[in-house]
Image (tube, rainbow, N blue to C red):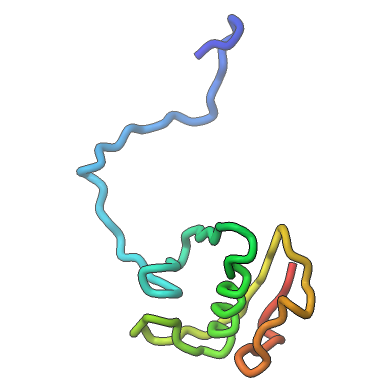
Length: 108
């Protein structure tokens, strides 16, 4: 590769892999067929459509070990790190009191 007559050096070579040789791996889910473990999940949409409400509901279910909606999977219990680029923590963003173990949720 060259840019403006200079040789560019790359740190590693890229290998082409034929798709038919790739072996699928089993996917495990936090929320069956919706939120996989080990993958990035983006919740996007217009303002006021319930994205934060959905995420806070999932956080509450996770901290209490409650099942996810529309899922027969065994409930999982865990801690939550909630990070938002748009919203400030406010009374309107509080988790439902009876659902969440607040000591298991951190806000960044």
